[in-house]
Length: 162
Image (tube, rainbow, N blue to C red):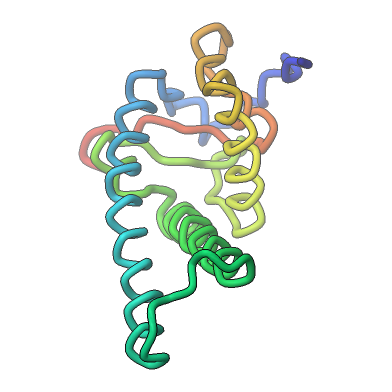
């Protein structure tokens, strides 16, 4: 397994004053967002299945390949929409806000939709092998996870009162 490059992102006046989030804060925000996302997926499932049951007058055929694939694609779209919306509108999910975290580009600017999609894709790959990409921030001298480096973004601590 190839490790990410050890190039430290350039410091700018905008990012020099911001502290990169350490692992405990990252895990706290991830737990909060996981709970929130679980509730959102339950609601999304109800909004998908119940109308089908009522309109078709039969249960949703979840065992059939096409229906199952459409449902999974829908839930994936909900997850992607959740992160892309929050990361591009203020740089924080609700869990990140509770832990005073914000995701920014390496140059300190807000994420665009493309940046958010890149970060989400790299985060999924980074977390897949038992979360090794996230645990990497314990050993990285800049405290960046694999997906931070690959997406050219960083998770920073928001100073109090901001």
